[in-house]
Length: 202
Image (tube, rainbow, N blue to C red; front, side, top):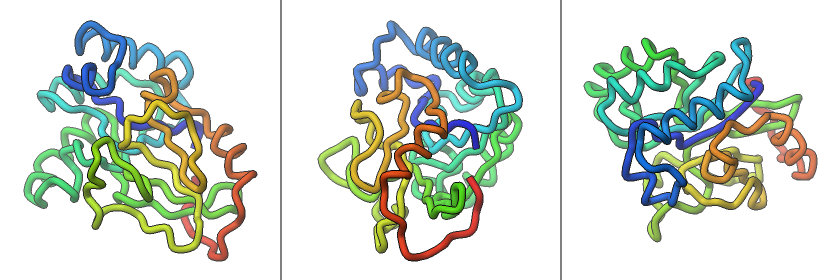
């Protein structure tokens, strides 16, 4: 993995107001998100997107995401049409080909693995926190049982990076661009090792 990000919300005009994004409309937002992504991500880079790629007319908003550089892996978020948290199996089967046609490889909701030999979890959802007063989708969140570092999106917080053993990678906190995985490596160097090893390589 070279970069990680989340919560681009392509095509979602209302997110400009909800997350106080500095764009006049969805088209300006989409164009700027694509520009900032492609300014740092090369064609051969691998990007892990932690959910909420697009929210709007699905065909046109996913089409925008097809302009992004790199190999793109998606851990579904609650606003993705391939999310087990919010979609039926029938809906997921219907929409999955649209995501794949736009260049997305769909991963599970929670990915447990290793990064340079150290345990790491990736999920749209944090261990704790939400963009509302209520923590939603509890049954789809990872559970902090042993202090394994977690990278996540979902909150739309402007706070950059770490909060203990969780690290927010959403675009609202990172100048609307993907986060280099080198920043994750630096953060993990300061987090104590959990007792269990995991499987997938990031």
